[in-house]
Image (cartoon, rainbow, N blue to C red; front, side, top):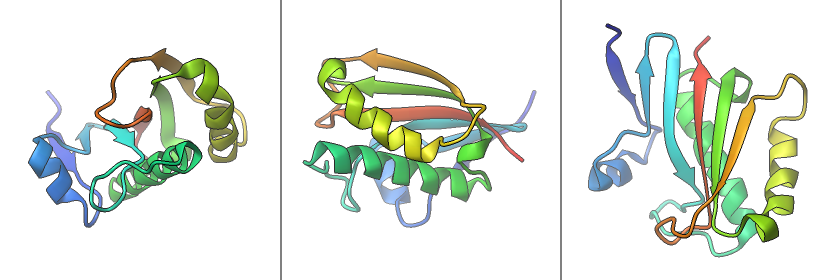
Length: 129
């Protein structure tokens, strides 16, 4: 059985400690990243939706970097949206910048009614280089 190694981005481990979970778990050559939201340094939600989505991707990038990976290593994406019909265009614009070339990762979008004060969350699985 592969060993689980916890991954934390620099400077944000305290936020994960408070909520008692790891930013990501490395198991063999796979990286399972917990849902990332558009939280500011203090953990509060960014109120502007587009900026919240961009910040969620930035926070995801920091977790990937801490594991020695990047967006090109992502194979599976799941996003959670509090109002998918209204938000999808904004999310698509941001993701098009991040995943600009084919092949694109798998993507599942899920509508939810609660994200702890946030309106968007992204979780991924990546294969480590």
